[in-house]
Image 1 (tube, rainbow, N blue to C red):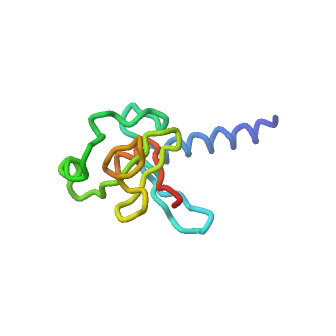
Image 2: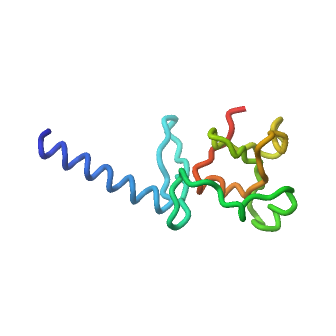
Length: 113
């Protein structure tokens, strides 16, 4: 591998790490700017959502994160969450109400349906 190619790869990796940790915005394929998730201090997106951030009711979650959207997070390998008003909000077997910001910080993503 040429040294210039190695340099570019290293630089790209360093910039990616810095952008991930600061909540910088990334350009999507559609060309719009979407916020990148900010990982909680000392955590990686693969870490499980702490039980202190999971709630049995939407009201309890709302009191934990005033001003943030409460979502229903499926606590399975899929790591997705459902927004209020969607078909699966609050209905999946293994899930919990969480703050959207917390879900994003731990690597969860909006469900496709």
